[in-house]
Image 1 (spheres, rainbow, N blue to C red):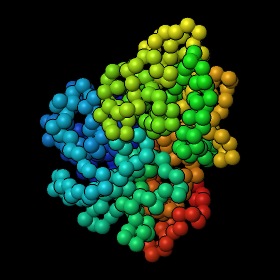
Image 2: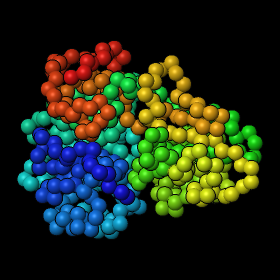
Image 3: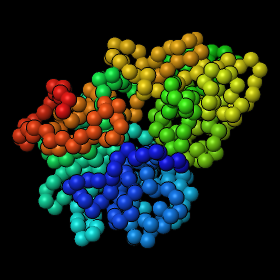
Image 4: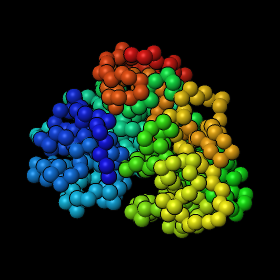
Length: 384
């Protein structure tokens, strides 16, 4: 797994100065928390010397069971790292003591990739801190987050919210829903595969204007499992993936174990082609065939710029090329809604270089704790 040039989050939780979250560069901590295994959230975790520092400091790393499984497949020093990894079951509060300080943490499933979670911290001083990690949630699904509501169904009081603001910019006001993405991509695939000489090349982590155009880079190959599963469930076809290590990883999870195949003749493959317009797919490891015609499908959040809900999820570039406007992060309107719904006393947005260009640690006007908020009747929050 590759490390990013810089971490998505600096690790610091002001209210809990004795822990680090999604960052492993401060080797003096005893307790670390990992929301998911994308490489910009594992900064400082790889490399023999870095692992030595963690082990020698008797550190503990807390994460979900799925994240541990992914690290087992991806981390060259997992055989040593596994001794300091502590799995916390999702939805069950756990008491943790470190450096003489005690607090409670609950893992909440985050819709971003396999194993992704939010962390809900509660201190002995009755402070509640939410770290979202990377996430996306439809506005009408917030009430389904039972761990973030009291027994009467009211939103919890959040004293500090550390929130994924990757697309905090008006040009990403909306993204298509995942359901719409699934529906439209399945329709296009079924329509294309009417002849035996037709194939699908599925790209993701695609930057149409950048040096990684069409490539699948590092840990960011993970995070598109729901698309793979939707395609498989609707068509009965398994997706071919060249890397044996990746195949083994997907087989370890119940939701994806039947989705990926090592059969090179599959009509759909996850593409590694560095040139999306090139018809040869030799590098992808698929079986060669004369006269095969490919439909290139690029999964790209960046293509969601200026998207409006009355538009389709797919943008067609040509007869043989289309973009699926899909995001594993909240749109700006979803982000604003989530913040307004919980009205935290303090907000910290990450990553530092999110597209909104604002990184701030801003107080917000706190609403009365007793106020009940209707998820379907929340006004859009103005930028802070």
